[in-house]
Amino acid sequence: MSIVAKAIAQSDRADRFLSSAELTQLQDFFNQGNVRISVAQKLAANQQTIVDQGSQQFWSQCPNTPSNRGNSQKTALCQRDQGWYIRLVSYCVLAGNSKPLEDIGLDGMREMYVSLGVPLANLKIAMRCLKTVAMGLLSSEEAALAGPYFDQLIRAF
Amino acid sequence: MQDTITAVINPADEKGTYLEGEALDQLKQYFQSGTLRVKAATQIGASAANIISETVAKSLLYGDITLPGGNMYPTRRYAACLRDLTYFLRYSTYAMLAADASIIDERILNGLKDTYAALGVPIEPTMQAIQSMKEVVTQKVGAEAGQEMDIYLDHIINGLS
Image (cartoon, rainbow over all chains, first blue to last red; front, side, top):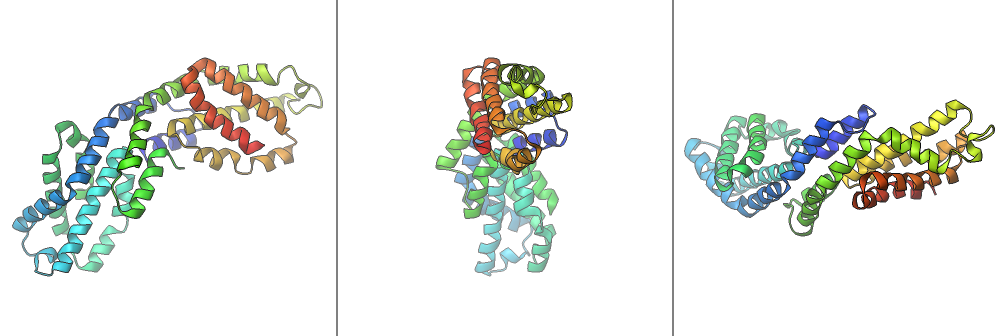
């Protein structure tokens, strides 16, 4: 679901054409198109850096965590998931909507990590570290578009 | 419903990849065409009733269909025809904004031919009316946006034929 699909769906439910508020919202979204593309490109190009630096920050704040206990397989899996969350944030920025993050990465997330024995409180810190590193790589305009999705991700843990 | 953004995100997620290359270019083009789409949707929404009246005048009004025995007689069926033409216009406008025809398939074309057959609504004049609607819409929104709307109104015509 994108911001465009969302505006259409709510108009459809009310049996009407799009309202002028909805049309203005879509125009604003399209106006930011180039910035959105650039956020997606930067997150893609820097995913590894964000995960690596984010992990270092995370382990210094929270050393006793499954990804920092010397099991390289487990560390790789945790870092893979972190990379996935960065990818989902990039989808959200392009869609102008948090549904990609919610549908792909948050629905069922708590149950999964509880079952894996990964403490949610630790993950919250990890996600906050990813955000810090990512924000540092983006311009202020880009950060303003990506930041809210990282915040939603942090809140979810 | 699907729109052009989710249509490129979903397959990327299936592969676990970021949007890059062709898919990202497709989105870039869509974003660039956004202003044209929003402007057209604004104009169409603001003059929808007008567009429908002109469409009917161009295609149906002076034919046998509005006379006793025709499918736009009596007034109840005339009004139903106006309502359906408004649906066609509204869903084509949605699809034009989304740059994706799937909402037309889901909400308009799914079962439409059977419904029209059951109600005795003739297909040929319906298609003629949509042809006229294309012309009326292009007059309102200009050639470039008109071409974009044609894609989705043609999609309905093709679905009826």
